Length: 492
Image 1 (cartoon, rainbow, N blue to C red):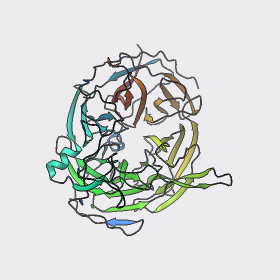
Image 2: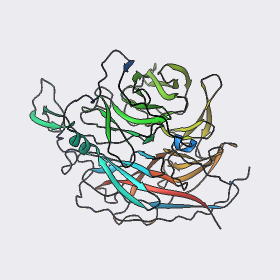
Image 3: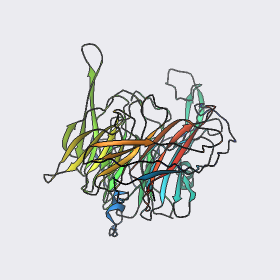
């Protein structure tokens, strides 16, 4: 194979953020949050690890959709032997109290318009943080706010409110501790999940909170999560509420899946019947994989962690990729290599994935190891370890995209010790890759450092890739979201 000749040409548009509130992002005030209301349809009752719910959903004839629409991406021809250039355009995200980052929360409507979820933190000027959702129209370069989660809850009359005794750090105290009684109102500080458009015409996502959780896995966030859906141009519908923090969603066609902590809990929603199912795959303490994936057969793939201490009192962990069918019954479990494990939020599990035209799915672990999951005639899947995504070995490869849908993958990766990210192009045929600089020129006037890049699978109809994430200002006082439109274009 002859690897392509690269002459990177980076283009960048920028617009400085308005810094009306120069507050250190990590500063956390006493939260004013609230309680637990069931979803309007019904609620899940506890009956062990596996639970089922029946809900009413209208019978909708699936519209005709292209393969790419169903997979939530776009494929474009790519000649690996041609010269091409890398063009990057920054899409400015408006600043608002508590704004923080886009943690991989991207997706698309069937129209080709894009969606981004901006997560927030609690600050003195944002005591009730609420994630916001933006729609971006590539044809007009227009970014539009389509709603914030707490605002939607307030409008629906579903926002919860409770009185709790809080300590000085804003946490609920035990019965034996002293605390100040405080009226707490619900917040939903994150939309961490992707946006997934299903065959019923709805686009689905989840919101979640983190208040009062413990990263060792011993305590869930107080306000849990909500499932949302809407059609482009229409208002949101709150579909369901659950106690866990639902960090990721996935779905192709009929079955929607969501992954949450703690314990790698999986929910499945049948968009045709309205039936809900739940199971617990298993994890280690507070570890949560940032991503997972599913295919058009209704099979979902989730890491299972088993861990203990060896004779030297060091962590001894094993990880398997568990394949479940649409009824959440286990089909197979395949050991995963190069999947770092900690008992808290420091290890990120599966961080990125990309759908391919033959029904297979490529995915990276947080160490940058690449797998391809290929469906087989027998009903299960062949989990193929391909090696390192980056040509120099380990990297944080938390963005991954299909290029032509057959042979080529690409995405941003960050190597430890290298302050600048790189763009990786990977050839599935030869299992080789190369890199070019991913240089963000013309940054906003407050400067950028500690850039983090995410984003999986999502491309617009022109073939642009959407890399999202966050960064710190040079003075370290703020953390802000980052949204980049990336194109690989042939040189004349």
